[in-house]
Length: 351
Image 1 (tube, rainbow, N blue to C red):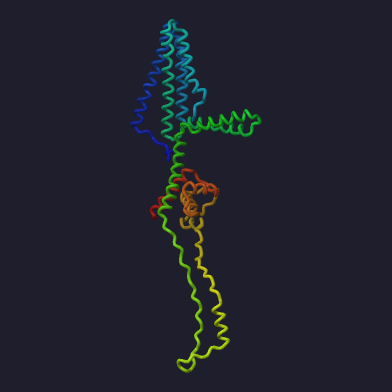
Image 2 (cartoon, rainbow, N blue to C red; image 1 turned 120 degrees about the vertical axis):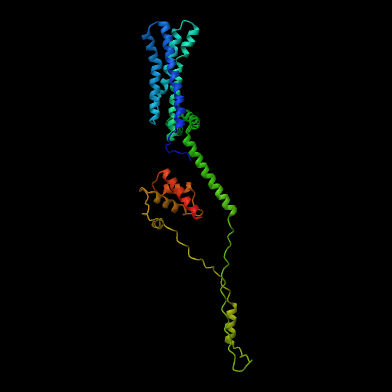
């Protein structure tokens, strides 16, 4: 599972990142010095050159610092900031190319302001990656995915309910194009999808192994009830002499022999009642968990244990979580997964 806990940078990482940031700032400053020198050579006025540098490299530096600050605070940068990081250096490049006297000078004057643009983008990207590493949250990826999902929801509704046939067809095609962009660049989403597939593969492997190694079930032999013995005929007083059989005894014997044998019904032992949630909570020494109420860690384990063994074979994690939500119990995803891990560890230790 993708680790979303906040992580600290090591000293080695801090040194490397600092060493990477220093050239960015240095080359951005050199670009500003070069632009100042170029403008001064044409206008011969320092104030004019400083104004051009402030409008180009200076404004780009301000936007870069805003981008870095918002990124470090875990917030996405507005579209105006991201657009300005490219627009302002482009304006400075066009200004340098316009005031140049020769084609060679135009090329040099146009390329010089781009150093600040690259430096600003590099610092913003580096700050973003640091935040993603430490918090596990990519704000820019979430912003892009949120915008894509909003557009996708609009086009799906338009494709289903718009009165114009052409508009419905256009939205249908647009929906399929937007579907390709959902989740692009979101490492956390990708990790969770991998977890889902891993859970499904585990369930499939468990079912396959259970089918291969399950012992055959032998039905118990039905109990046979012995037929009643015929009453013995009392011997007469004389030894070895059998008393005569009367007509009444002959009739009784014939009726007994003609009675068909009764079907033997096997005796089924009474079913063992399932263990209730209250009984499990009592064994664990905690109050009985109730739907809609906050649960502590032990109560989460109690609920998951109860739900897991409500069916045969026991429920998997995904099935138990679905039953947990349907029953109305409250618990965050991280706490539920941690409680499930504790339950599995306890089962393995018992095994």
